[in-house]
Length: 176
Image (cartoon, rainbow, N blue to C red; front, side):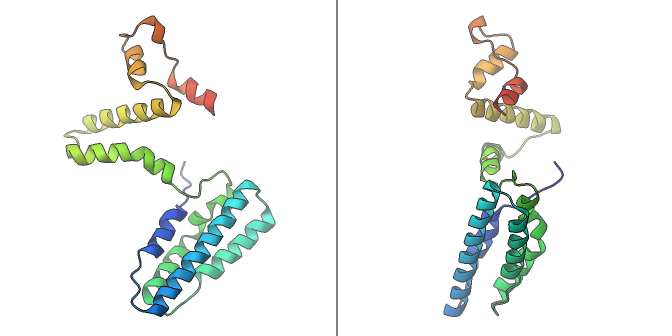
């Protein structure tokens, strides 16, 4: 739980957000984005078939890419900044089950963020915990293909016996 990885999609997005002013700067950014995407594909291949020799090669390749200096100050600063996060960006080399991007977990949080923006937040800590619990249960039911309302009705004992729902923990464990 305490070991985190960084998202490669977000790392590349930082390159995409740069605002180059000259054709040379544009070329540097395009080249670096291409290098990052090729590297990302290599990391995906590594996840499918981990190999210690390949891991060492990928670490060396990472160092070559993120130690480049182009003369474009913003790009060079960004490369340096991303290079300092090597351990988190290359977490997949020590733990191949680690996802390379966080799109799925961000999608899970989207409902919470939209609700928070619309409502302006909660008044109390208890309200925040209740909201987060309900949204978490709703999202879990959705991922399990289970009606949240049937689940909630079963737990509050207002459903017919026809809709008896197993505990979510056992359903999640069965899917794992």
